Image (cartoon, rainbow, N blue to C red; front, side):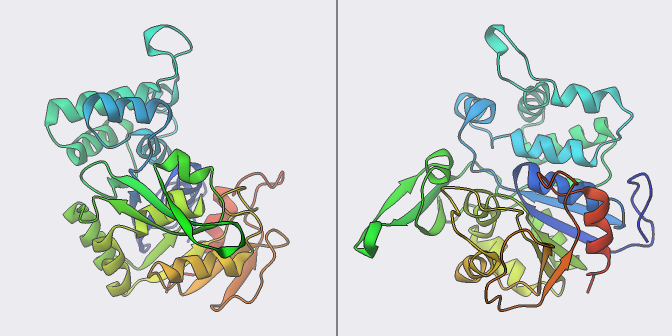
Amino acid sequence: MVGNRGEVRGNGPSVVALGGGHGLAASLAAARRYAANVCAIVSVADDGGSSGRLRAAFGIPPPGDLRRCLVALADPDSPWTAAFEYRFPAGELEGHAFGNLVLAGLAEATGDFSQALLEAGRVLGAAGRVLPATTEPVILKAEVRAPGGNGGRSIVGQVAVQESSGIAGVSIVPADAQPPDAALEALAEADQVVIGPGSLFTSVLAVVAVPALRDALAATPARKVYVCNLRPQPPETDGYDVAAHVDALRNHGLEVDVALCHSGALPRGPVGVPCVERPVARDDLLAHDPVRLAAALSDLVG
């Protein structure tokens, strides 16, 4: 049953959502409406903006996507929720989101970034837990095909990767970076895993590229649902249809059980898994609507 005000359902499933950015935040805002337990596993490969500056200064995982996910699960009536999204317009703090600074301070105070996220979640009244994909910052690396298919080259860094086309695959550096134990436990106990929406290579596959998470995704008994993007993201996925997105997941070792698409958005192509079309976007088609997405996802619990 889907809640009317976004509250977690006491008798609902355990849902793990993974990815990064605004897309994952939409999935979490949806999941809290029908799930009893919600856990986010968030990419920590970002190296741009406020997140990149704090990552470079303090050696912490980039906090921006993690902050967005905390806010998506937060008590909407708490002043802390609005404060976490406040971005300083000028001075030495120009461009920094207040929540990013809080997470950096909590990480320093607790000595543990996952603990910092847990404490921030308590302050925000978060209806679920947010975890980094790895306990240390990682660098995203992509192999990019040369025009015409002759050879290729490596691209390093999330910002550089998202500005590239012809991406054949992504990996992380260091390759043996470990996820928090709690992330592996959440996947093992999940009833449903929601993948995306979001930037295919720089958000979704940046999580799947963590070897221990990829293995846990293969082993989980949960039903894995890929929430398709509403449009290509040039140049990263210029010209991609739904089938190309699903193929990219498969090529990185992730087999999903079903793809959830907005009716009339991306062309489907020869999708190799069941593809469910539902009206899950906002009226302006610019982003997924959490209420509509919750109704569709709650019907796709395994």
